[in-house]
Image 1 (cartoon, helix red, strand yellow):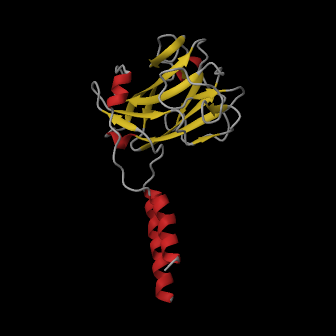
Image 2 (tube, rainbow, N blue to C red; image 1 turned 135 degrees about the vertical axis):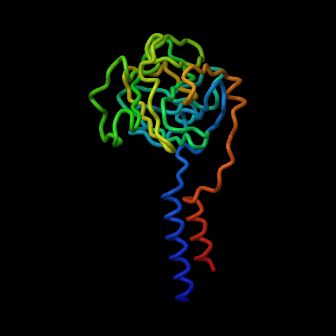
Image 3 (tube, helix red, strand yellow; image 1 turned 135 degrees about the horizontal axis):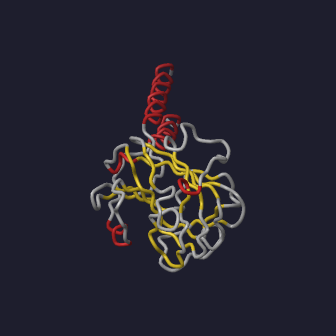
Length: 232
């Protein structure tokens, strides 16, 4: 009996250490090598965290807004108020390395109601506990474009980069979208990061991007293994 529990404890400790090393962040994503760089794509509804269920909401799943025809799955929209969405993504899955990357979104935004983009490392060394008060329109704004139909918006403010070009770190990165103006008419569908700053994505590119085969997430493996051992 003692040996059995020693084995259980040892296995749990090993799996906990492994889970600390391996994290998949956004678990559903695609990768590609278009143009002269690499890309990682993920749909807006697959955020890791949000501050409230009453600001940024899912269009279909939370009955916030019926997505415009042509959306990939669900959308995220702002039903009113000030909030944020956080995404963790790992550029190593796409073979990417630290450096300048461009943030691009497939969006509908008929009244150029923009938001702010904050990136760990580029905009600060710690994930903020509250909305930063230092945002600057010319360097951290995204989606300030009139976009009445689905389009891949790669600029931040009327043709200029705004907050779209950021320095990413090797491995896992963190981005947070904070409310600036976005409202119910805005629809966020798919986001991507590209190491080719001049790359212009298309729907066909997203369709043809690769879904990588990742090993089993150790966080889920831990629960399964512990359950199996208890039942012996």
